[in-house]
Length: 249
Image (cartoon, helix red, strand yellow):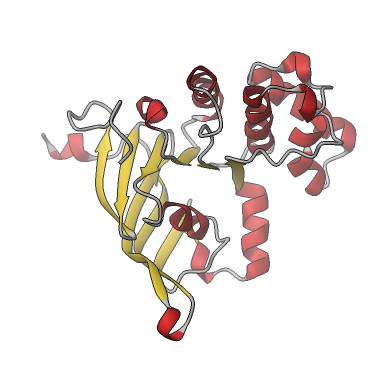
């Protein structure tokens, strides 16, 4: 392999350098992240995998500034997250980060379009324009005919696509997903991940997915395996040891 072959094909979107994170104090203090290093590139889906308690969700949370770190540096598209104030982090997330989780967290009294429009409405976008953008995003996710449906009338897969639409509607540069398919059957999970890749992966955007779901590993461009609070191995699509259909790591 030449030096050129080793260069990332896309710019670095997220860089974590020697990151430490502790929970608790005194005798109950636990170190969740141990000198963790990670890079995520724009234009890819990076999956964080590993056993429960290894630090995957903690790492995701410090990357977006929901949790503070206790050591190291985190840069997201060139911005140093750990040097921002709480208000600055909140504004940064509102403009640059989209979230999707295992629990869809849809508001039952709002339609699919209204749920998907929430980030825009919070940002002050006029309601009509926000609903139009949400409807367009829902259509791109394959459920344009369900924009006026309430969550209880949607299947699990449709609800997840509404949640993805909510994460995408404000055109964030970073999409973070925590166990997005674990509550879905295999076929539905495959469908929503394929749609996420088709809609979300762009040359100026990174997608980071925390998952135990080995059924979706083949959607990853790279997989970062975590153990005991740090990344122990990163494989990329095409590597012989890239765990496309492996057991849960």
